[in-house]
Length: 287
Image (cartoon, rainbow, N blue to C red; front, top):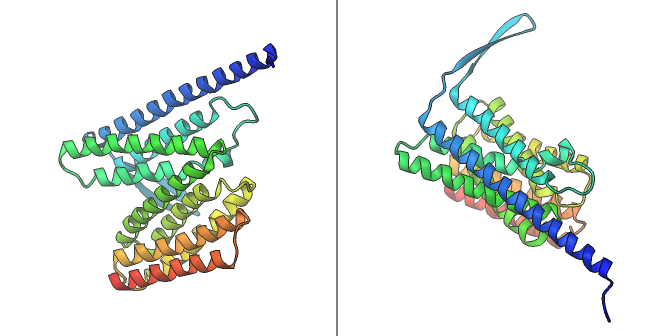
């Protein structure tokens, strides 16, 4: 039985289009990784001068020192967000990506870059600094590649790897912020924002409207922020606090993720509660 020539031509055209899209995305991901690596390297060797910003609110003057690190943070954030949107929009056949949908991809890459920027500030030898910058660019390219796979509904393996990276990164972020011993207003807010962004990464593949994804993510962030506020009144060590926050984040996001996938049952809920109790036990042992 001979295939219809028009069907064969359509199949070849579709394959060529998919190949072209993958090539374009590969070039964009390589460019994004290179720009991030170069910017991180520059941040290690070129110190930008700080600027003082004066604001007036309700009759009072507020000053803010816009440091060089803050300027690099904004620059890297713009590079990552705009580059990621360009990769995701490459070859879209349907409607354009909305802002809320694009923002759900930003949390993981952004926090990878911010962690790298904070690590570079602690290093003195230029070889380590360049190595960390290059490794960050490579990790960023891997994460974006996994995100594009998950966005195309190739969810299974990509989602599993993204989950592992998200939870590992959350432990680093929680430990870094909690170790600063900032005022509760600052530390709780920072951890709430971080948890919200990371939760959006975990929940965006659940076939749930994006407004609900952000609603559930904000709930996780709010609970983590409240938990941080309470922990600040204790003398818990950085390791114990980070492990406890990770256990709570894992249980909350996992239960919500299973609920949105319509897979949550009594057994699953018990497994997440057991994981939370194990986290509490480990945090107590590290205290």
